[in-house]
Figure 1: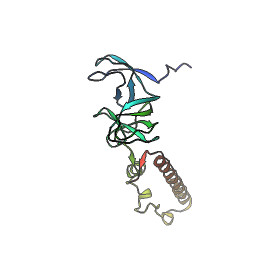
Figure 2: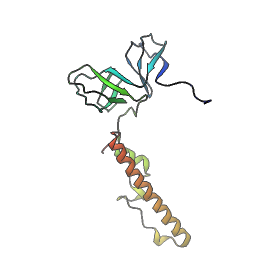
Figure 3: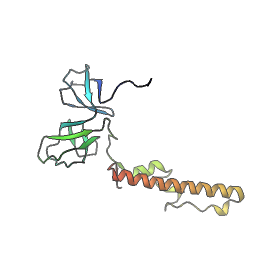
Length: 186
């Protein structure tokens, strides 16, 4: 394959400010990995972006298998707290409160650093006026059949059907995101 470069489980990056020690979590933009060895700031370092790693965690948290795990860049630790942190993976073993380490299966990249997307934000992004499909407050499409005739009425009817179909797909997507823990209820 002419566009293939290399596997991506281990990549080389430039060590961030302060350098890194072997086993440190490294977050650069939306890329998260674990340093394979220690090096000084500005030097090349390999980070592992996938697989299971034992990471420093917020000691005062209990983790269960499958919990979403985030990176707290300020504390330099893994946490279950989504707000202000970056999703890096999922817990693969229970970790008691208090313990300093937890086992995390890394995703390779991070999710939205602001945490889970709220339902209200998702709806606002997908509609023109913050959630009212078709411009009404109850989510129903306005009845414009009395203002259009012939071909225009057929076009309006087709557009209304398309918008209803898109709204149903949006609801399906929101349900899947909620089930996956990526969409918080508003």
